[in-house]
Length: 206
Image (cartoon, rainbow, N blue to C red):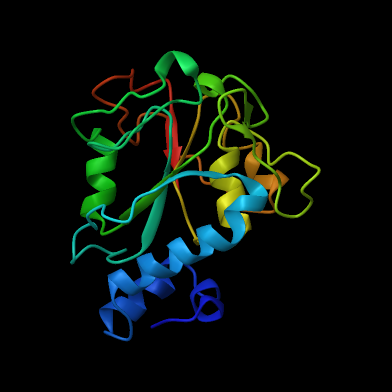
């Protein structure tokens, strides 16, 4: 069993190396991530769902065994509720993975939950009537930015070392500095948003 201190001291590649060297199992890392969620999330409100029974990613990918959270917008996972921060979409449960979610699984990332987003992503802060505001881990009175504020806050709080985000007009670029993080926004058309969205609208990052 890995301790929370040991877990939070590694980045994503470091955790993957621990799994590859059989120093820790993917289940142990997922359990550590859930423990971190239970410890930290009541104060920051970044994680909406925890998925104790969700299947892990590929055992042979570069991030095999690394726990992962996805933002509830654009990308979605099969049989995992995706509310998009909006009462209009509340209760939507997709029947298939989006293409990028399938690629995350192939890379070995193990889905342990989902993160908050403002309603349909249209806000530079992450606060909804449906789920309430997300708080910045560095200062709970401040915002973590948006629209990927839930993902940014989760990483900044040490829940996991990397997570999913997306950006059409600053939704990675704002939360990254708000949370003292590095945000990766790939060039347009490098990563797919199919099948529901135009490939030119959003770029995803972890």
